[in-house]
Image (cartoon, rainbow, N blue to C red; front, side, top):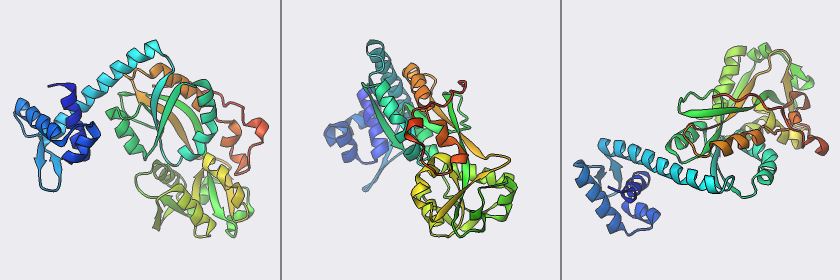
Length: 323
């Protein structure tokens, strides 16, 4: 058994097709098929159920694939650690971010990241939080920006900032004449929310539980942009994270944002990576830069108004690290 065979094993499990797996591994299909069969003979079990249309891992295959992924991740970590010792802050880092944050946070911080790490190639992945966690655990991501809490003893977390929520309502809504509201007033509202799988949905449902608000059950959006368009069309109200609210200034004639007076609902954002990662020193520095969100962007009193250019370079105070 060698590492190449383990790579074939993982590729076949991911692609579930011998031809596509062989193409991904840059080998011929007979070569990959022969090596998989050789591995099955060595282990004494059938790793894949073969049908005319697809290939599926058997229970033994699923276990073998999971172990192979861990071995390959450790080998990648060994190579990365050796390379990092000779060339610190250079190379490639794979960063994941969830879709209700990425489009609004990354444009604010990436210029500073590029200036600080000019030799670093940062590969960005945007996925729902559950998928980011799975990729992070399997070694397919080096770090992920996630909403707290994240319960995994194998991951290290650095808190970045707290992002408040605002209430977005159409201009003709009874609340559109006000600048703020109390959390308890949400009990009289039916909120439009995202579909299952989005962490923002879970956070909004928590706010609903605290305030007594109800979900608008006949509609669930697939994206934050869809929610925004539904509010603009006058079809309902929703909770909007502060960073996303910045992009609503051009629609001020159709949409109104209210802050909360008493108890400010919000979400905590952090950067997470495997405790065994060779990139930990670099990722700690990256966390410091990701905290560099101008405080004005997270201030609900600014609602959707643009931040003056002279204020955009200010840095938010860095909270203490946490494991």
